[in-house]
Length: 541
Image (tube, rainbow, N blue to C red; front, side):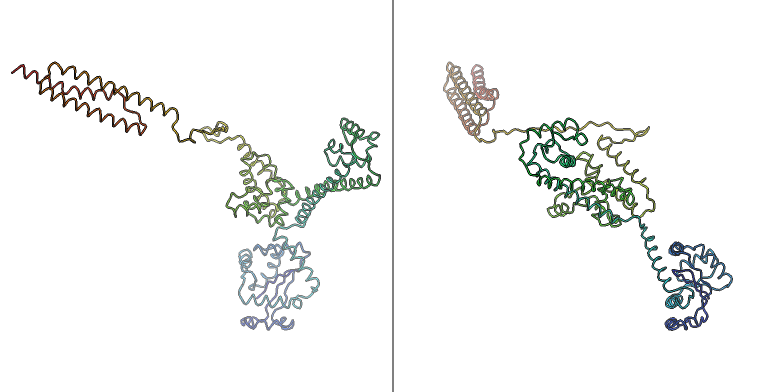
């Protein structure tokens, strides 16, 4: 039986001399305690050495992926096929590939694993011609190369430099602001008008460095630094300045501070260019999507590009707003919609109502770009450019409020009216403050009183008419009936008065006169009909 053993130096093929001892798996390690004992079990038949680390890396990557390298294929065809013996391999997957492509019988079992372990322990004695120092160096180089390959890591893609550069850039900005503020305040005692005329900080410091004392502005030439109009204004202000006089020593210290400001500003521009170049080399797609400054801050916040690639899109969206997030969760309010990604150009040019939506879409596309830059072998920025174009198109549709509508012929923009908010100004109504009746209610009560008086007058007239009609044909019986009729009318009048009193208390309108008049007329008409009937009976009799 033959044994295929892979080392960092090359391929080794051993021949098993005593196969009977392989049956005792538990005690097999005792046969490899010394190189002499190991040589009695196995013997080196062929050794194929690698030329360099690159060849070793190619061979081992092929073995990890379950493929056969060209060099290994030549060795197996040359040695194993001629021997016509089974081949022991450490990887069952590799054995299946060898059996399929080269038609060789391969063995993989626990006995083979113990045999491989014994050969590895006595490798220096079993493989002659290889020094231990060379073996160790080759092993270390292969381990590093293999680790880089497994992580898709390149020595050029060092994101630590980006983290340090963006941190230094932020520190320089803070220091520059402090120095410039101190310089303006210090020189402002001598020439306060200059700070209002020259707003640019770097130009202000260069003017100070060139001129120095306020008296020198009249003869100084500032055409290289300032336009003609501003130069004339500075010279005119220097002649009538309200500043105090300072000594030459004070001017020297101010000029030294101006020199520091100019040097730091120049170094900052140089550092920014360096950061741009590193970002385009390490994360080109992220740079296209969010810009080099925002991309560098995201990488620095996560710690590295690989750590950032492990984050979800929702995490990248609010990265940098952790305090606001936990404050919102604690107080049960709305969580923040954006963090560091807010400073990206796409979010900045969006209207406030669409900022949250655009930041969510931008975070999703940025995560894809981060993972492509971290794990992809291609270093082009084509994917970033394509995704940015899609986001810009989406932003235009949101701003135009255009909704795509599918019709029979194709897609067309549905026209919708632009929403315009109309604010309604509500004024305070003081009428609800008082519970007293207003003028309108008083008028209603007065109208009710007038109607009651009219009804009473009409009722009195009706009484007088009834008495006048009953007088000529009055009999004893008729007088009795007349008294009854008068009682009926009086009862009706009393009932009407009671109703009126109740209505006055409740402040409700009385029913119209047209509805009450028929009641009196019917009440009065009923005794008249009875009298007529009696007269007819008397005439008949």
